[in-house]
Image (tube, rainbow, N blue to C red; front, side):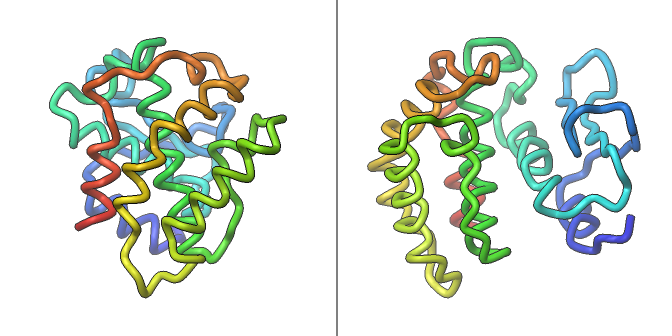
Length: 180
């Protein structure tokens, strides 16, 4: 694998890697407990960029953080909680690490301009206008998280993303990752 950032991230979160040119996404994480390839990130191309695999690396992190892992949430209940948490992490990382204000969580599937504007405003507030010299605004994260996941549910066309959240998966992994 040529990308040193990916290699470093994966060394910090032990996970198996396999190349599978048949997968639909650039990368896919199969959690512990899965019947096939548990604890494995499949890469469509070995020369993948860090931004393309970031969400799956965070899913591996979630899988270790939550005692029961994320496999129980692969179906409807809780899937949107796990997915939204990972997408928020990626959006923050895209803003701070890559200086890329592309925001995935709401805008990808949203026809609701108001929701998109609120989400982007929230992202810029969390990151102090893309300033990586300041810590993430955790108070703002707590204040607006439920509102933003509500927009995610309302505007997502992806199966399972518009389901209800589950109370025991309320972005604790995200807070832990952002405050380390």
